[in-house]
Length: 224
Image (cartoon, rainbow, N blue to C red; front, side, top):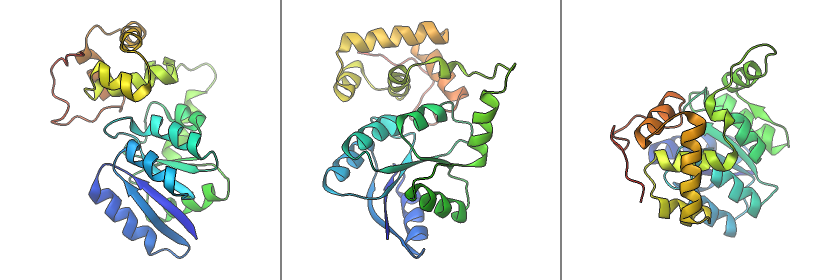
């Protein structure tokens, strides 16, 4: 039996995937979490085989959650499940230790196939994501997203900033000083060619890091 942990901040998504997987012989949803922090807490007391990890969630998000879960259990197989087929950082997530990467519009058969394949120790990347990764490395073509120029830590800080996290919150969650958070923030401005949090959020929207929703109003956030 393959035990699966669902990590997604949308209850309806978790419910749908749970019903789908529990109807498949050999698969069992052993737990659910709506934040990366809750997933970390679950892993401390349980040992699922595979984790289906949402990318954009409140708090630490899918990238940092992936790192922390693998630190606790290096044998864990994590599949990123994302809304976007053109996320700007599949390479970073695979480098962080994710074994699979699929989009939420994949069919049930592909999701089950991905779970079984990564549980057997094989990588699984959906066609859309694999195509983007392949295009990134075509000789003579510059398909580089500015997001790909960021270090892993810069990307983590950016994801938290554009979600409205305050400096102290980022400091606490990433275990770095507030001064270091501010340094990362201005380094992001310099690398990405922006001058305000609003411009940073707009860039995140264009590159699929941030969803355009009422929770992300078009106004400058105050980073305190």
